[in-house]
Image 1: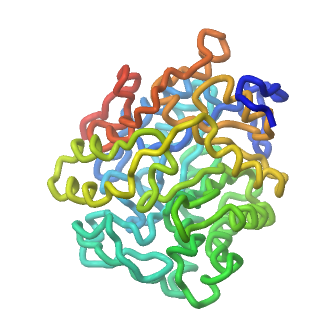
Image 2: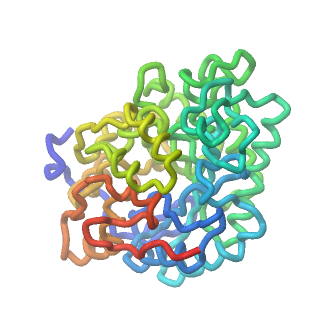
Length: 410
């Protein structure tokens, strides 16, 4: 293995077109799903959400990913997250049309927060996850406890994913991304620290993986054989007792056998180890400042011990990801510290087929174009992580240069 990013020889042209299950993308650059803050009351703000993603499409990425499309109302972590219902499809079509106008393709992340619901509309009901437990994120908004999903509820929930995927395709999305990482519902099923079930959905990995695999099969049934299904999955949960790399490798094999088309290899658990995902300085203090309600400030103060700073380095998931790379033939997408053109080339040289960029593109939406033109070799992002806190203020933006438009009024 090369000793530095700069020493890796590039074997794949990051600017050449490539096919993701027959979907031709103009290059290997993908905008990662990052919560936009442009769905007031859960409904997409057409101009705000379209403008946010149009900047990346115009700036040269091959695929734009909309963040967190909940598959049912109780699957949201915020009131201002969208739920894939029929009444928002025209709004989403407005967004996909804007992306397509600039030659990029559109994907949407389908998710459910499981036992970590912080949606105030769920007041009076218990959040639902793989097991009974305490819901620290929801304790001040009426969901302090989570209950275990019953066997009779799982088929309906898998069908919610299917229907949501069908609606996404009807709204013009070219691909779907299933969120099976970061401590959301499907990640909760996979994590031995959270999934304490004693039936066929708990215990050994093959049981913990059973419901996530039911979901991907349901989605495949809904979208057919031609629409790419990308799965975002954890390499490690990042805390003691959580999912570890051995089980992740085995799960990747199961996804390959169940018609996943590509894997985004990530890590971290939003409620327990958020900085394992982000790395760099904690943003929790800025997040607290951004809250409008005292009760939300209190929630994040309580969460502060799980959001301690961690050292940042480029391609910080690479070594773990290579263990998955050795076990499957699926296209793998690199995420985590892709902050320079050298790191893009290194990731592709190591065997990844594409890169997902979040913070770097928030700082410079035209970064892919600038790399292609040779006007930049570094992203310019300082990894201050303050953009994450901005999602609760005026919509995600880079505080260094206000590269993205502020949130449109509701």
